Amino acid sequence: MSNGAPSTDHWKRSLSESHSKIQLETNLQGQNLRCYRVSVTVIIPSRNVEAEIAECLKGINRAYEVILVDNSSDDTRRIAEHLGVRIIESEELPPLARNLGAGSANGEILAFLDSDCTPFNDWIPNAMKHFEDESVGMVVGPTLTQEKDIMYQIPSLALSTFFGGGIAKNRWRKGEFHYTDEREVEGSNLFIRKSVFEQVGGFSEHFGAEEQFLADKVSKLHKIVYAPECRVYHRRTPLFRPFIGQLYFYAYGRGWLARNKGTKLFYYLPTLVVLFLATSIFLSPLLTLGLMLTYSSIGAMTSLKNTNTVKEFILMTLTFPVIHITYAFGFLRGLLARSQKKGRRK
Image (tube, rainbow, N blue to C red; front, top):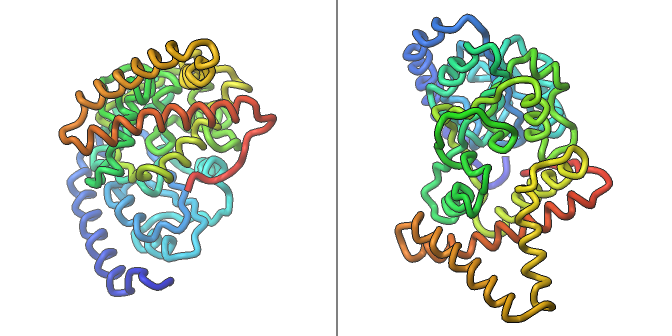
């Protein structure tokens, strides 16, 4: 390991504690497992997450099949194997890694989780009850922020408002139960029938909006449930530069999806608004000033409603233009691209 990495003794203690927690959770959840007659496979793509993987796995009952599709050079694989996880070695990027895991899964329901997520103990049982309705093909839930650091909290808080996240805001907050489409789908918290997954051809190899591409196909054939009780904690990227990079990549994928598969007009709005604001100065400086004041007022009022301190208010107010400008450029690049980039978020 590199300098500063946790020691062997640290990992032994961590693994021992995680194993004890998992055994306790298995005993506590055993009764819930008997309520369902279908099997579940949890699929997690991973790459060099030795500091996170034990935390990710601790909330998953080991009565379920868990597959880690791993491309690591650190101790991720050893830690997962110690916890009884099935390992598939692969250098594929996340979309194809997920497909690889799905192809090897024995479960009738596939549960996709990211390696930097920690599911709640009742994550799987809460999703399974919705599959009692045979018309439901997919179940998704919110990915919540656990970090206490304000630089990690503010991006999610801003995106969970309508001004910041629009119709996709429930990805970052606990909303209400409803049937949905691709707008609220995250690959880090997604359940799907294996038969449906195979029916629509799995994840697209074009990385960036593969979850939306999958859900768009599913929604034309089956119901998608947004289940607020199916919660996971998702470790975030902080303001400003890491967050901008991640958001840009998502927006690029969204733009590519719009170009090739079509999308709702709403997803064009941030780009159209930013372009209009940028060009309005050539029409009338007074118009530009009025529009900017209106925009700033909406951002300030939204921040005031959703923050508790002056620092939070300032950061959130600054985050809104960062979100909209970054999304606009990423979406426009994806919209104009001839082919989708293939890469990795991390």
